[in-house]
Length: 252
Image (cartoon, rainbow, N blue to C red; front, top):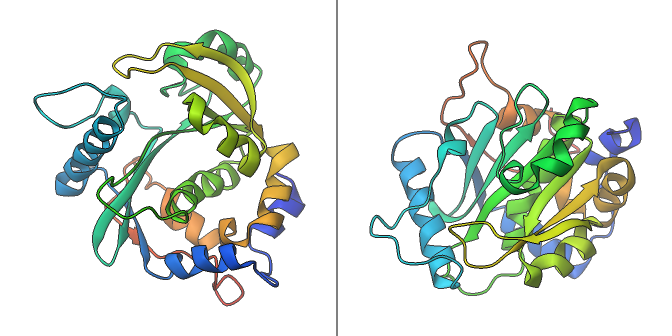
């Protein structure tokens, strides 16, 4: 679970960032996070999902050229578009799993491993449908900017772990950056053409080291509320949020 120290680190001081950290922070200066729950933004995300997965050979031809499912409509779903200079460049979907709302992609193939833990009161963030526009030049910083949303969600919802379904070629990244370890797999996940592994990063073990190592994952409580807080009736309106990683000292 999140500790007081992890909460403090989430909005802590950035000191002597590395060259790579500076490159991510520079990119964040141009980023807007946008919740895409309706309208053209939502359709643009669905089209980007298909475009990216099809381009990388992990999704077959689909006449409608869009990728969505029933989990996009669940109350525990948060779908984000990442915009740079007004253009959609990447996206990620976050599902907040609890016993009351156990809806997430990972539950479709690894529910046997997670259901008993949900029953014990553990909660999780499942980041899925992570895509980057394949037409863009390779940018090492963009996946970090996108997955920063998952780090913030873990802190906001005070979760046990981040649970991810990962293709084999990406397992090293999740282990290296988030300390994620393999818990299960590989298992098939239609309509995708490659099997997926279950990787987990426990917050009580990995949150503090991750925030200490990568200053761009830090955020203010204000930014997290703007991204994840719902109204009293459970709905969220379209909202653009500017990252606070560089400016957390001055943010409210």
